[in-house]
Each structure stands twice: as structure tokens, then as C-alpha cells.
Image (cartoon, rainbow, N blue to C red; front, side, top):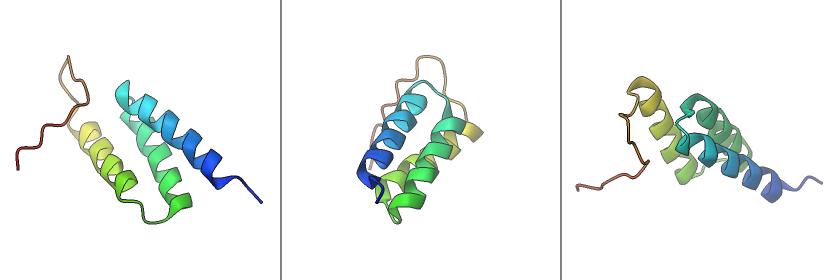
Length: 71
């Protein structure tokens, strides 16, 4: 039996580290792998969407990763 929690926790930690350091391609791959293990996961899906957006529209200098909700 594999330790799914440990495996997905490691994926998440590395995905977040890559996301915060603007390595969106690596982060995307790790979040997608975590989602494939977990199945439907709204938070993975959110970060996958954000990674895809940042790959297409790279953030400006000074980006902190903080999202401001306007609505």
C-alpha cells in the first residue's frame, strides 16, 4: 500500500514552491500529477488554471502571488 497522503503532500509542497518562484510549467505538471492521484480537487484545479494563465500571461516584476478578489 502506498502512502498517498505523503506522496501528494510532497507534490503540493514542491508545486507551491515552484509556483511562488514563477516556475509555472513545473508547478503545473506537479499540480496535474497531484490531481491525477486525488481525483476531483477544486484547489488543484484552481492552481492548474492559475499556472496556465501565468504561462500565457507572465506576471510583472514584483509579483507576489497574492490574488485580490474584486467580486
